[in-house]
Image (tube, rainbow, N blue to C red):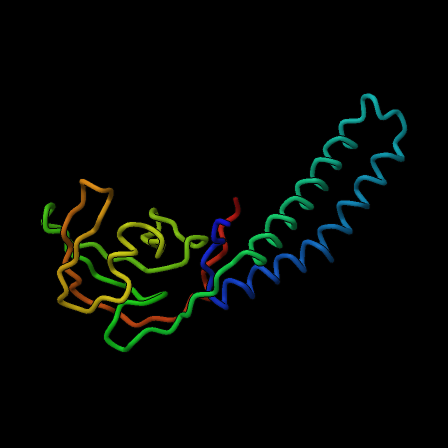
Length: 169
């Protein structure tokens, strides 16, 4: 069986909160909207009815998706050794080939967003950085025959991920 998402305890709490909100609030509103639209009579050309049904179904499938994600998730620790790159840490990385330095935050894949400089611990770069120390020269493996070297310049221990939203799929 294929492994689920790797989530932190915090990810799990956020997902549970979203499920609860969707079940208690969104579901009620969606059901009401369907009822109201149905009450308008002729369903064959009732756009509101179809739109309401679609919204209701979208909410239900999001709930199922999130519940499945929690069921198959592997919980990863947000703790890391004081001198090692870990979850939610901000890492300054020097790319030898490009002679450039970039800063990234290591996150779980559901929080990954390269535009935001958040890289997933599942990505080649994230995998290479995780568990390494400042000053380490690390090979980032892209595939069997390709990769590149980076040097970990700085690790900022920052374990706060409260401002991050779980990205919708």
